[in-house]
Length: 129
Picture 1 (cartoon, rainbow, N blue to C red):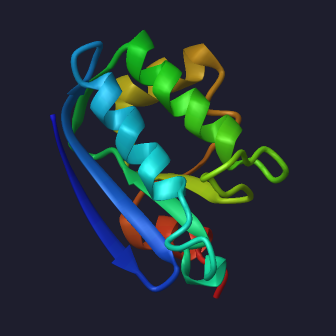
Picture 2: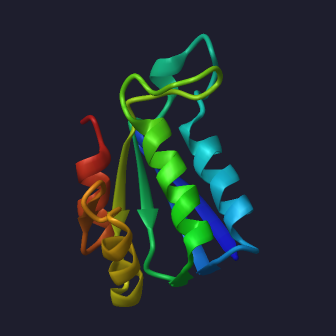
């Protein structure tokens, strides 16, 4: 699995490509938590307000990938931060393929995450601006 990263204003965008399965989940989870970490401890305002996951190129989401996503959602909630990880970050999904959406719905994660049909709408939703 490849994961591209882009920053637009106050939003970080992650674009995983391929399956998020047991082999890829540790890398996916590490990238999620890195995106939730403050840019610098003494300048938290420089840290993006939102995290957009562009899932358009994800071909499969297994329980291992769901677990990684759930851990990130829990960490991003206001008041959930621990040392080295900020909290109160808005995680928004973009362009979720049908089979991946079904997995998210079955696991109950679809109700926890805002989702948009295209990347631009998701970036607008995740931004503080």
